[in-house]
Image 1: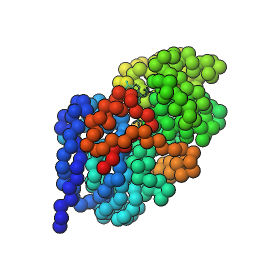
Image 2: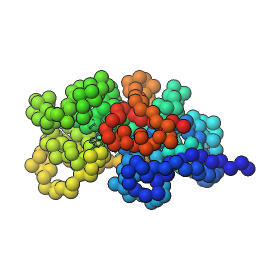
Image 3: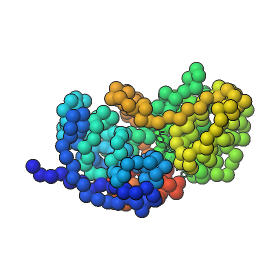
Image 4: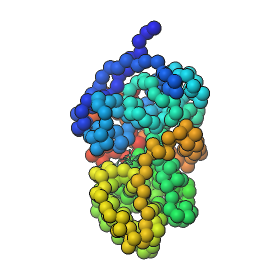
Length: 331
Ligand SMILES: NC(=O)c1ccc[n+]([C@@H]2O[C@H](COP(=O)([O-])OP(=O)(O)OC[C@H]3O[C@@H](n4cnc5c(N)ncnc54)[C@H](OP(=O)(O)O)[C@@H]3O)[C@@H](O)[C@H]2O)c1
């Protein structure tokens, strides 16, 4: 049998982008519940930065990457939802998508509809499924109704631009923050009802002004350390603080006692991997995502493309806040 090899990106210690190195690996046959997939494109995500830097400590050495699209090349025992030759895409654990071909669990791999290309598939799964569970499943008491205000930080990023469009399709008034006027304009173009440049404006004061003093029902906060305190004060009584990332650093410990005087507000920390823990849940979420993309309500914007071997530059750009929308690695 001919041996299958793949170029892949590994780290052997935590640190900066210089830790990312191109290696050659051997790829075997899929075991029970697994597939082998030959990638067409790979998605870049901020979680890759946390795993590389050590903010999320990992067992090393490791192959990075949580998202990709490609063609199913071999199917292990017990896998019934995929066949050899299927076009597919995924957001999935364990990491390892930064490569040409890999063996991986089939559970979170979904067939890609004909109307969605490989680049779009690679860009949209992790970020789109995140927007799905945030806007559709991470809700305040009584849910969200058309006209309701929500605050979404980093609105011009990968998850952000998908959320802007999806929120608009749901009739929500999404107030988007971003770090420059150009990024704010982009978020507005993609459906944000209001935008705030949080590098130059006090976002808490602006949210009060925009909502007529009422505050928002939910804050979706992936920035973390820099936005946490003021975000709590943007909430209406009984509002929900949905923390889902730490692009500026982790949130400092706090006492639950502070939540009462702020209006009996709720706090949750969400991760996609709880939502996609089963095949059924993953597929149900993906079906909703595919539907909004196929209908044109949500367009997946790929603003940066880097060759796999230029992954260090891709990480530098993402961390330096130089990117907008989605970024993919090409093979
Ligand atoms: N928990 C989950 O399930 C889950 C799933 C997916 C993503 N996420 C999180 O969602 C966020 C967005 O992910 P993404 O991949 O789409 O990334 P992204 O939004 O394209 O990039 C991150 C953005 O965060 C903003 N930011 C604010 N302070 C920053 C800082 N000090 N350093 C770097 N960036 C900073 C920047 O936008 P501005 O310049 O406009 O501020 C930057 O462009 C990330 O925090 C990620 O970890 C969480």
